[in-house]
Image (tube, helix red, strand yellow):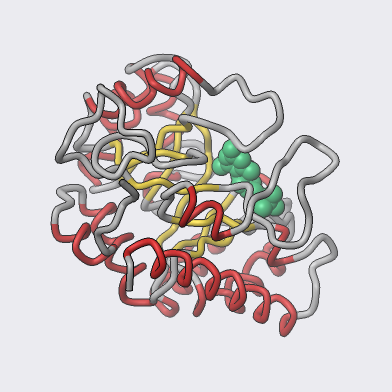
Length: 276
Ligand code: S5P
């Protein structure tokens, strides 16, 4: 019962423009790799994106860790997004009341909604977090991912919390395009098709905690391989950070080679899943 439709077939049936864009980008570039660029200097941020750009469908940012942030950085990120054809995902993890998250999403220094195709939220406040973000993002054609599970040891996002997250997403299908999760959930292609599944829904599953060379880090992160994530667990996108840019901001040719390796492994696992 693994998800066997191609990314391209699934793109055709998505109503949300951002979900469609991501699936089309994956199909066009033959890459289900997202790189998480968690560095603190603008210069490193841009040079890593320039190097990995050709190999990714998506770049994930934590814009608030950049020490020398200036608004022009966003323009440069958008230029790179056009040049290399990737979607932008600001990993903001909103988790407050609707009114507050709407202000955090639209305003402040970063004005996330104006440039980030995708952002994410913790379901912990309940549906109001989606309502607040949707009031800003839906008119702009943006998409939201709910954190239904986490990659960390001891996460509280499990069991009934995860199931409730899926129900919350289901009630806001125009704006919630999928989940940050460790396995496929919701609708067709469930690994464990539950009584709750809905036949015609198609959530995107973006999965962090991916690394080929180490099992985790010293602060609770846990890694699995692209094959475990895409083939065994039926997820759609692998999100890789330090596994690609390194702990010491390795040389550009090393970063490029690693990105190519993760892209190849992610795509091979997908080809195996869809049976071609
Ligand atoms: O459960 C999660 C959810 C997220 S969004 N676990 C995660 O690691 N992340 C993010 O993915 C995290 O904030 C970081 O930006 C990235 C993983 O980075 P890596 O260096 O461990 O690959």
